[in-house]
Length: 241
Image 1 (cartoon, helix red, strand yellow):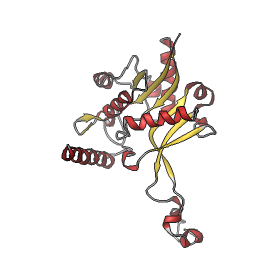
Image 2 (tube, rainbow, N blue to C red):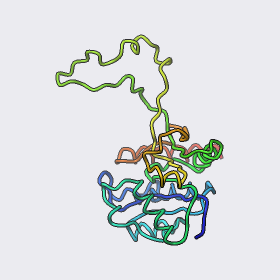
Image 3 (cartoon, rainbow, N blue to C red):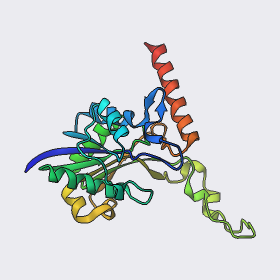
């Protein structure tokens, strides 16, 4: 059985509840998933860039952008209830049947199209430097969760904000981060032993991404924001050139 170092998996099932055919919807004239394929290839850290899809049409588009689709995703893992990690397990199993195993796998969701090759390379540098079990991308939250709470039925604000927080200048509050969905890099033997429950344990590290590149496309508004970002940066870089 042949062994390769690094596998990128880009999950792109057909259909979508929030935004129809989201993964191939044209973003500034290019299919959404193409941005992630191009970033993965440009990072030059992967032996194989695989698009996991249940659709022949999606597979053809993926191949046009130089990704590999040696097998389609099963119907069992193409529904709304399937997790991305089920997809990873299926992909690893599929490659194993082809005689290929990998040391590291990176899940790159196409819904984070502004994550770029440099982000992937920097995450990999951290992965190697820390001899990490996993590296997962995060970004700073827009609003501190310390200013958030649930509300009772009568909408009372009693004890809504901790009094210590009210007395603290905003600049002194701790910085909070959220998982941004851009990069999930994990050691394959570790993942096969621990599964996704092991991704937030000792030996797992955060790669901090800029908020502006962390747009996660779920609906039309997110799509509009990503398009506006790309147009703005194209205009800026054009002006500078």
